[in-house]
Amino acid sequence: MSARHALFPGTFDPLTLGHADVLRRALALWERVTVAVAAGGKQTLLSLADRLEMVRRVVAATGQGDRCRVVPLRGLLVDLRRELGADVVVRGLRSVADLEHEQSMAAANRRLDPDYEIVCLFARPDLGMISSTLVRDIIRCGGPLAAVVPPEVAAFLDGRIAGNGDHTGAGDGG
Picture (cartoon, rainbow, N blue to C red):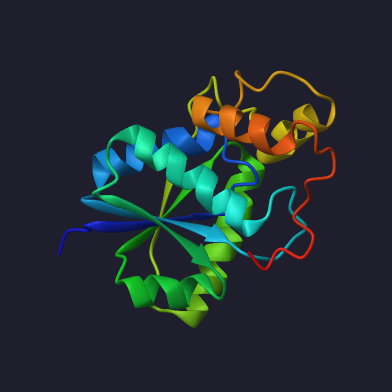
């Protein structure tokens, strides 16, 4: 059986050029892709509602909205994978540290779901240094975002962050 539906989970706080590249490549590899935006697990700069909207704008810009949907992830990834009937979980890797983390997470998820399968896509060399943490630091310092996030995200963040220096994800129930 060939894999047709991929689940691409993440916090996307915010979505970076690297995330957008993994999404574009996933859409080239699978018939359907669901982007799952994680609700909790850590303090976020942006609320869940804002992160969902931001990801939806990036999906719309791909022109592949008929093949890609965006959903919140409020529980266990393995439960959402089963609920959606996704064949694989897609993750992007920037470094050896990412590889080790994903390997540990895959092992834990397989304990919970023996059918869990992960596919890792290596970051393009020119995008490997970009992380959401870096983008948040640039935002906090008032730096330019064009080199680290898609145009849709830069425009969204300009509208959300400008004049509102404390737009945090506190109370991120979304």
